[in-house]
Image: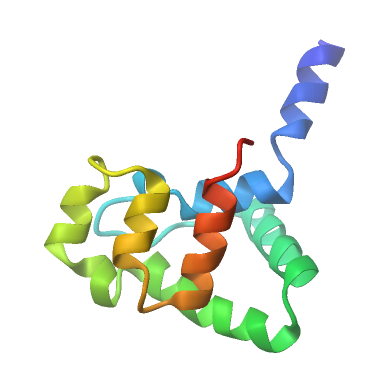
Length: 113
């Protein structure tokens, strides 16, 4: 049980939470991403470690666009490619209207976690 608890807590690191949130396959179709307190804390904790306050504000605005499916994220082509593309490729194709978030998503999702 101790081994299980250790591995479980390892997967709850902020970078894993960010990877989960930004993986297009795990975003509910036509619905905003619902985040609990643990996800919010992981997201905010990660971006505050990596980015300046001004960049965090921009990231929050860009994340809201992704989260709520605004702009290119509401496009039928982008939705149909979610299952066909690797996550980094999807972000490279459809995330250029949110460049800071696109950069974060490509960096996090291209790592071997």
